[in-house]
Amino acid sequence: MTTTTPTRDAEATRHAILRAALDLFAEEGFEAVGVRSIGARAGVDSSLISRYFGGKDELFVEVIKSGSVNWQRRWGDRESFAERVTDDVLAAPNGGRVLRDLLVLMRSAGSDKAKRLIDEALGHQGFRDLEAWIGGEDADVRARLLMGFLAGMAITRDLNSKFDLSHERAVVMREQLRSAVAAFLMPAT
Image (cartoon, rainbow, N blue to C red):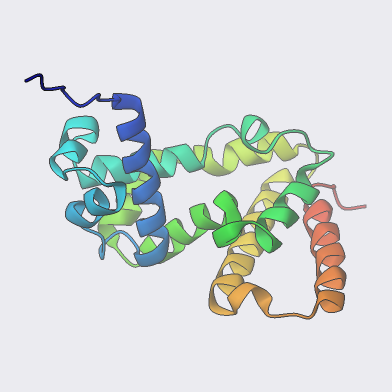
C-alpha cells in the first residue's frame, strides 16, 4: 500500500491566510478577530499564522501594508482611476479591495493597539505616497479629502446594502461618483 503526502504550497497558504485576515478584519475589526477564526476562514491550522507571519499583530501589519502599496501600481494610471474606483465602490463584490482596505482601518480605529500597528505599517508614508501620486498644488489636502470621501462611501455602502437604488438612480449615482473622485485629482482652479 502506498501513501501519498499531501502537496503543500506555501505561497498559496500564505495568500489564503492574508485573504482571510483581510476579510475578517474588514468585517469585525482588529480586536474582535482571533487567529483561530483567521485559520478557520483560510482553511488552515491557526499555528501556520505564527509560522508565516509571527502572530496576529504581524499579520495585521501585513494586511495593512498589502492594502497601501504603491498607488500607481495599485490603481494604475490617473486617467482611468476615477472609473476604477467607481467600479470598486458600486459594482465589486464586498465593495472591492479599496473599500475593504478602508473598512479594515475604520473598524480597527477604536483599538489603541491597532492604531499603533497601523502607524507602524504606514507611518506617515501613507498620505505622502498618495500626495505624490495625485501631484500638483494642494495634493496634501486633496489626498486627505479623497481618503475621507472614500471612507464615507465605504461606510455608506456597508450600512446600506450597496446603496439600494433603482437602476436609473444607480446610473446617476455612478456618474456623479466618478466625477467627484476625478475632482480630487485636479488642483483647484
